[in-house]
Image (cartoon, rainbow, N blue to C red):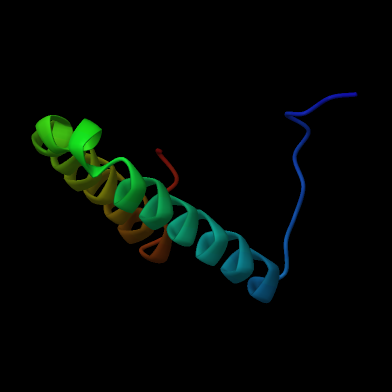
Length: 68
């Protein structure tokens, strides 16, 4: 069984997956907020950097460049 085999989701399946991940993260954060509070700055930095990376890849794709 290969867990890293590529697969494709429909748009609504991807949306359901994202919703489940967000609600799971909110639940964990609400339950263990004292544990995660000292780590808020690294989490925000990671979120911003990954958001910038994904935005750059998206921008290159819509402009027809394929050097990512």
